[in-house]
Length: 552
Image 1: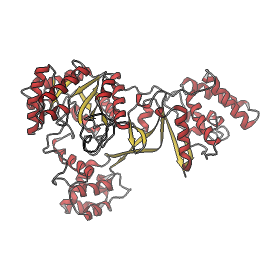
Image 2: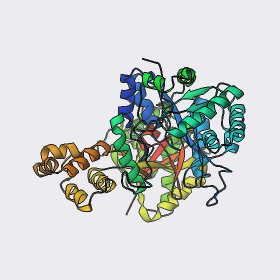
Image 3: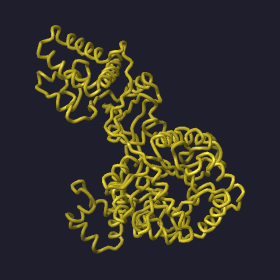
Image 4: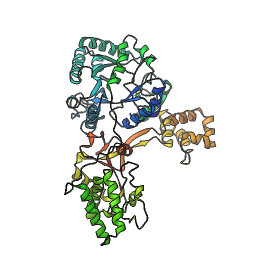
């Protein structure tokens, strides 16, 4: 089998476009003997952490990247009819420097450059290109578009600019062959530019689904996204079924005239060696009135107990000293001070605050600081359920605030730590069974009644569509007697659970020592700036995430 690495791949986090479920595509790559695999979703890093962990679990080297959109002018220019076009560019992380720069690029694309899509520009690339390898992109890359427009001189000038920016060995002219006429024209132009400017070529497949037979699934996803019907005129879909995870021999055959473009995928993979750092706490710096935060936390706790009890019993002091020793040894002094501070603010403004939920109620230190309202000793609650040195993880304090005044709390946190150091956290709406069925029926051009009839047979007692088929005799009968219903259910079961859209977590807030985008990528949901990583991933990366719930 020819050695080959896929460097242009869209997972389910290219929302309603990529049909590669992360677990499936990594397993498929491993089964084909591929040692490396890249993730390059459209304009986002949503799936980067999950992809990384899946690859590591399978013994495949993960390459973290993104297919970014490059604005034709400045990313700040947003004039209808002029700035609607954009060019595709693949960026891959060589190392931590590259990852940090990719975070800046992807975040700025959303926060500053969003115009129908998140966009970067040459100016920000000049600032944040170190540690990255760039591939010139698919048919919608800038060089490909220049070639197709017969502007060969402009294509050469563009290639020269990127080569000079990224440096020798860090910029490749990308060629693809899915059997499309335009691709051959681009290949001819790219070969000429490659030879004249001495820029290496690399072969990629624009992978959107795992198996060739999954092409129909991807077409349905696109139809759902664009509110079109599969196969109708002007539907935004691929013209054939070649956009799957091909093996090395298939890629070698597709580029038999350019074997170096295939082998260069392995050269690039060798250069890409970025690893996420999990389990290392990265707390923001609390602005305490003294330098010794350990001593300050102790004094605040003692003061709190004295306010509650007057004279503090020995058993309380003994328990407090034990808890503080654990808190200090695990590096969480500032965590408690930060939480106590914004709860103190809320109470000082008469904003209703809940008594605390979950395992945090077992902490006397939290009780002393006013974080919780429950005496753990009187109620025989264990501190170890909340914080245990043998299970190193961030404390999990769930706090309830009055919904109507939530803005005041978030505004305070923004003022205290800086708006660039605070962000709300993304969450993903997924294609649940009933919605998946209705979406698929519409995308296939079937009458509304078909989707509605099937959806009404799916209730919460079933874990998924396949479970419902096993247990619901009426649904099974419909499935076996009606070809349209069979196709709807088969298709819906393949996309069930995939992320459909990104939104803002109702309670999640992250606070960082430096700007948030130096740790995780940012996006925009309406006017809100949110992380592109979930609550769980934020915690795994050692960042301070607060579960700040707002209740009515």
